Length: 252
Image 1 (tube, rainbow, N blue to C red):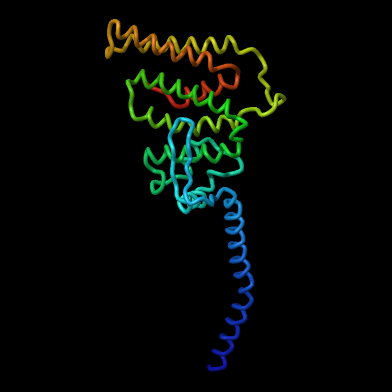
Image 2 (cartoon, one colour; image 1 turned 90 degrees about the horizontal axis):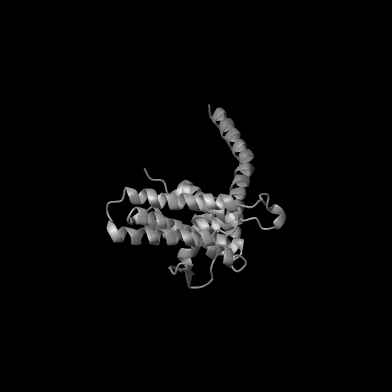
């Protein structure tokens, strides 16, 4: 019996030694992947004690070095090689612990824009970025007036930064990348006309404002459309305006 037990101990010991290299290899590979991930993320780390993220709409986020670098470690999707639409990214990666509230989502979109802006080129696309933010803000303002305000439109004001930056990522970078070279004058006229018709239709069912006040209100709304008409200068801006409009403002 004693001899049988010794044999079993020998067998288990042999198998344990045989499997040990594989276990060590798995642990080493896991550490290597973690090290690689941290090394890639470290390109975005800050060495400053405090970092300020100032946006195009005047809001500023403030982080300590540890808090900012923690965000980079815990949300590598914000700095992925091939950016994704911020709505999809948010709903796929964010839980209720970190950016789960409405305000948290606003902050997430600002961070998304901050990191993607560095990938796109901060100075290179200043003009395009400003124009896209204006276009999206005008559309948000138009529908905000239709609904007489609401928290959604306030939050959209912040999130527009993320939508605009993603649009810059989609912007054709070279002339040979532009396929649709036809004149968009008629298409643009139809879109602008549809917005003016929307103002007219909304006005007919709006009993919050009457008389001269309604006339002034409609004038103000049409002035927003006038600005959009000026800002939408080519096919790219037309398509992005329509995509943002139809993707975020739907009421029945």
